[in-house]
Image (cartoon, rainbow, N blue to C red):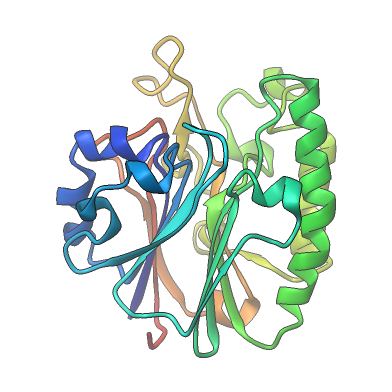
Length: 260
């Protein structure tokens, strides 16, 4: 069995102060994909770099207190790939790939466009560049798992207030159509949705800090495990961990009947 977790931390230092490092060994995860570190190498303590039972690999953003991705793993990877080779994207620390034989595990943090039109255009530019990279991964012949915050709710079932969000970043028609192309044209699989095709509120992974969104479960499903078909078929169960809060996101946990 192979257990993978995807988790947007909204700041690793903040999450650690809320007990993240004590929780990690309890997960039983083989890999934990992290997004939104909001830290640079100089900010990382030894405990953050190598928590109990894990070794961490990270791709930091150049801007302080911004973005960044990482992966904690129990097994030493054969190869580590930081970034996509696109300077303006890699400066924001959005892509980290670890290779374990025929298995590729990726932590992805797709941009948000909610802060303004300039960021929405940056999001579209990322999506355009990333689509070709996804195609190459899909054709690689390897088992690939992309864990991350994609900042897109794919369908109406994936957020509470879909009617009022149709003109908001994260649920725009263009974004949703792009994600449909990822699934339909490239044959990537939304693993959680494959396991639970009708799940609604229990599937949400992010809640606004405004009002009582989390208390009332007014959430969005924007964190995904997206996998090549063969790997996705081995998924046996998935869950969103909500017993403790470390972030405005919740960890997405999936078990695969896959040798790691």
